[in-house]
Length: 318
Ligand SMILES: Cc1ncc(C[n+]2csc(CCOP(=O)(O)OP(=O)(O)O)c2C)c(N)n1
Ligand SMILES: [Mg+2]
Image 1: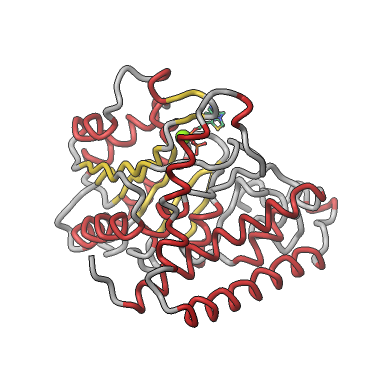
Image 2 (image 1 turned 135 degrees about the vertical axis):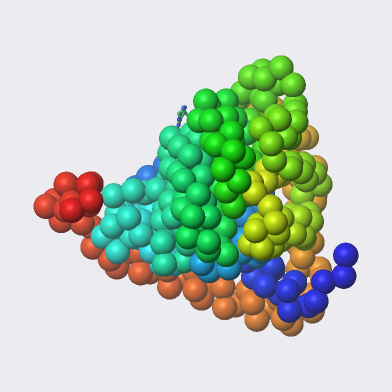
């Protein structure tokens, strides 16, 4: 599909930025400066980028512990994210949440959670409130295929369809919940059929094309904004390149073949989208992003750890 070059630049900047941030996290991780576990999105960035480019700043997203890509694609502050990973008081959760608990409400990143499936009902409640207020914003909830194993996934889809709420469910199906393949956990590979059974359209996107994700998400989101559609379920097939948690690889564990990942690396969207742009434009984008990343890591290094007295603050609404 023909895309304007301005739009391709925006996609490339976002894809490159997320990839490079996570590569820096991989590089820094062995130093122990990062004080939380990290679940990397490397290889899955195209899902967050494709969907978030179809959103407005006022739209809200909810995500999981594998949330770096979503936080950045939606416009979350990079400096506050890195400071959060370092456990510093300037972090987006004041250094008490770590990588798995990112939020930047000013940019519509409402929160990510370490507990599988927990943001799904929250996103439905948020979307229901949008509907009651007659707002033209939408809520988008990202989760993995493992979240489908949770009861609240089913309760939430049922309620969302019943109340016709403007929520886009985005299942990033990388086929694994930690080391268990989908078909060791479920009878069938039929997530879309299940979503349809609750009363909503469902689309499966295969092939890892960031523009395809954008086109499909945008069409459904625009219909939701106009009040022409209730909830929609997107299943985006993807692949996690790294180990479940941490900066390394995990082929030695034997639960999946290296070949499964190799074909996704071949179709990587970062070089693909780069190839659609002039070399000079790419260099400018990359230079700007590299400078921003260096500044963010320096900011995290130079920030202070929270005081001990902060430990019990912000736990409950005061
Ligand atoms: C309610 C709950 N049960 C179990 C866990 C342990 N756990 C952490 S990650 C994970 C796998 C989730 O897989 P998926 O949703 O597919 O996301 P992915 O890691 O593939 O991005 C599990 C079972 C948890 N965090 N929360
Ligand atoms: Mg998974």
